[in-house]
Image (cartoon, one colour):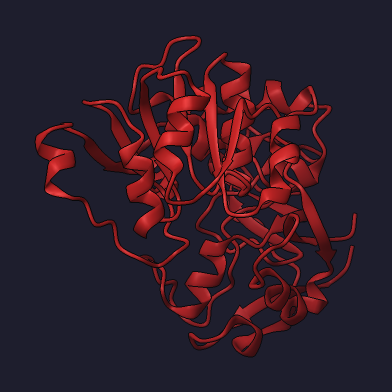
Length: 331
């Protein structure tokens, strides 16, 4: 086993490609109750870039290692560890900095992944699919055949919403910015896919034959979020979980007075912090079952080794990608 590992580090906040570098560190040693996990894969999410830039609500103590998401294989365990063993594929917790070859972590914080799920897919179940699961369960009591609407439907979270909603027999209106995405999202199970423009309300009404839409999912903000809110039935809920446009939500008084809309938000890291271990596992079970069947696979545009961290974060910061940028680590 290698005596040294590579670790991505930033000493100051700024443009990720400028401030991120890779350091060599000794192989970690597990303390009592800890396991050493050899990382296999970890994605680059917008939140990771925001944290390096210093724009994320939680700032790690500097110098810091980024990475909210990742999966790996248990290499060794310390004393008093009973829930994981060497060789187990596990999902890493969100607060440890996953962009490193190996890490010693509290064994009780690891989620063991069942067989038939690849490490690269396990590495991306924790944030986007779990966000999608919570969005579909925690805000509106949807029944089979009910409609929901979302913007940024091409995002990893948006695609997870489509797949999970399809599985649960909910119907989705999916709003995108580029017409070339329409067939792709329909093939994934999106019932209606429309390009975002000023006529959205009329187009949605026609597409769903006037059926009420009681849940809206907003990852964009600004005018796009307002157009989504205008498509909702009275008494409905709009849940915000992203702000891609960097524009605030401006809600006309009429949407509150005459439609009595509810505006909510979710931050999945906070859900993890507040959930019991049983609640976390209960939520992972259906995601694992779907993943075993080949669902919830996040599209990947390119995989980089950690040694090319600067190029990887620069690539991840570009718009109009066809999938995630990820780090892949050796076996």
